Length: 622
Image 1 (cartoon, rainbow, N blue to C red):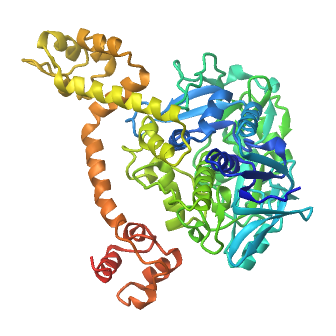
Image 2: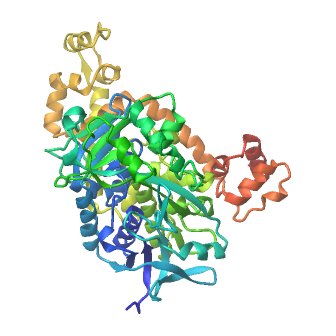
Image 3: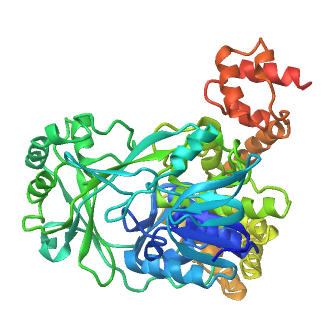
């Protein structure tokens, strides 16, 4: 069946595996995607949504590089929102509600239409290795499939254990069995592993809910989209709804705490800090007698509903009794109860920045196996692992994104340099250069890079270059064009901004906080320019940001340039830190374990202080 050798074998068909397979195949590698169930490729295991705070930026970055997540999201969206619009553009984050079934279907269609991508359904329970290199995989039927590189994207399936109250079920997801064998083999190779926990809420029958008692949560009036390609924005959307728990609901939930695996010691691993279970919220925030619940439809043509905010591993009878006391849920019918799941992960400090493992050559890890949580974080890792597996096979330079180039760069650098002992989730606060890493300019930042490595197609580059040219010219127009007091003062008065006494450059007036593009469009010169150049929403938004935040953007660029000087100071491979007695003991220990490639990376290692970096710089002759 598998006489030929594949260039890249991807194990697992979730968000990380799907992006890894697509990237490697689109770049020209003969790729095999092996998964336990071909019907669940791209499955949304938890909430039916993509994007959100910082996560939306990641989806835009995946799309800009030539990945599929943005396109699939747009094709299956049922609602779109731009979050944080009341804040500065560095915080704007796109989010879409999705049709769960269509999302998985669109992923399957996209992959089946990708040349070089083959499929096989079976469990992989072992790796084939030779002389410290991975050379393929072994399946549960004993088939040996040869491959030059292997990407493991096992999600929550490695020795997965589902908890519902005092009941425990082996499984990687509701209704699906766990994956066994790989953890044990990796431990034999010398890898360290740990256990993590995540959870999911009940799914309920929307026909049993009273939406009149809830608060509607509609999408944006003028919805945008994720992909920079010509996908279609929504013209019809489905509402979500919001309701709240109460003191009574909390009391009913507490009745089951003695049977909760989280409190009785059955679950020993750490769950996601920023997406706690309802019992964890009640326990940690005991002073609050109410928590928000978001009622999210699972698609256009299904009555199934996701109860966001009610993630739980309490016994099913306790879940049901408590949820019935939530406003609007008085007659609720369950499709399935919520549950928690424990699974194996491998601390990501055991990886290189390419996501290749340090111990086994040509073996890559991506997604929750690295300790992350979230579709978007997983998909971005899969994309980068697929890219780098292909590049290494072709003896080309690896593809690594810096912290000032992408949220993906921040994510991977955090994992590789700092590790994680709890499920890692991306936030805008983790990115020190977030003014540069906005969702609106992901194509400007990354499409040229994606095109250069052979992933982003010509169409993307042409669209990006046109957007960049039009935006740059529009900014220049504002810099060069003056406006008369009699034309601009009525606008300034309308926003309670100081009037001008003589003509001034439009750029300076437009830079004022209360003056928007909408105001500037009231000037004939601006409106005529926009019409003549055929500027669209993207170019106008990009121009406004470049004008109003020019100072902040320039400052962050300067800070990034300073960091790059340290990025250029390389540390020799397998450097022996124990011989530098001037380093603190903790620094020697941490640097020896992480083996940073540059001084800049060494400075980001937890436990390494500025004096340690000075010692390293002196030793390296800097």
